Amino acid sequence: MGLGRWVHDLPDPARRELLVEVDKPRVPEDPLLSVLVVTHLGRPLSYLGQVLSRLGAAEPASEFALQQWAAAETKKTHEAYGHRRTRASAAPPPRVNQPAARAQAPSENDLRWAHQRRARIGEKLEEAARTRVRAKGARVQRLSQAIQQGKAHLGRYEEVRSHGQALRAWLGEGDRVLDLLDRLIGRPITVTPAKTEHRTAAPEPKPAKVLKPKPVEKKDPSLRKIRRLLGEVDRTHRHRPTQDLLRLLDEIGKHRDQLTRPLPAAETKLVERWRSRLEDQRSAERSAQAAAASRNTSAGAGRTVEPPQDDRLPAERIDKLAPTVRDILQELARADGTPLNWGDLRLRAGGQLPPLHPDDQVALLVAADRGTPADEPLLSTLVDNSVAAPHRLYRRVRLGPGRESVPDAELESYRAMEALRLRQIWRYRR
Image (cartoon, rainbow, N blue to C red):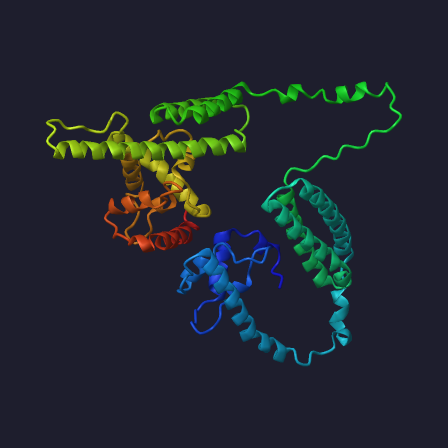
């Protein structure tokens, strides 16, 4: 079955919604059609469990149980619908005699693309074979499977080349085969040509002149400082105070503003990862200090120990920052509604948001949602806190405007539905 390139380009949330609509309304006795859609390796989709939850079906408890259930459900689906297809096609009219048979002939453009795609896949298969020789571990097996898949795809070329629709489907499948091979091969292997026996002395200086674009390789001074500071954070994070490490990240932010080009993706990910990790670490340290203060007070130590409050924001500063945060979350809801973490929110704010105490983060999101009607989802639904505890902020923010609490077991699915509602509500608002 081919649905065209538009399905291949859809994000996972949209694909998940499409599968939910396919199996609605859910009839418990009937097998699911969604299980027939698998990854390029024939495994269940990563979000199949979410589809089951949306349809009201029981989600298997583990990944292994999900794979076993999907295999059994696929067999039931084939058994349930296979005989219908047989009866429907019991006596098909001879396609050769139909006047539309001529329209099935492939166009010259499709044939030209197929010829180029065939050659391209052949080159990629050779490159994958060379890469497999150097690969180790599980990558060897994945490369072998991809090579077998690519060879099988090339083997179908002669069968489909005379049928237009089948050839276009073959081209679409070829895109996925090439994409799989590209991802497994990674950085291309440069094959050094064999040296000839007769080498002349004259041409040897030429390669040195070709390598002259070394001035372009000049590193931006600010980029060098950023990389040095990132290395310092990595080396000293085990024995250095969290506040000092956060100051290093703030210094990185100042150098980042002076870059002539955007910060490379690798360094951007490192900065965001360290920012999220250190803010969580500082929050944990404060919680530990507060707990120690509580223990000292209850034990009658004669003095009250308070966690450091020197970096807490006053209420008026939070009220000034709230419109900026609300604008960012509204634009995010209009676009795609994909949640972002606190570090991403600070980046989108263009440096207006300082590192915040967890209580200030909650107060700021509550202030940003102050104008949200009671029958609409909170815009704060789109802010994750961390990979380890993505719903911690959301759970606390809901208490601010007096929203009803959600049980922990239902919080993830409830929040996903609220994010979807946000996207539907804000899609056409301006």
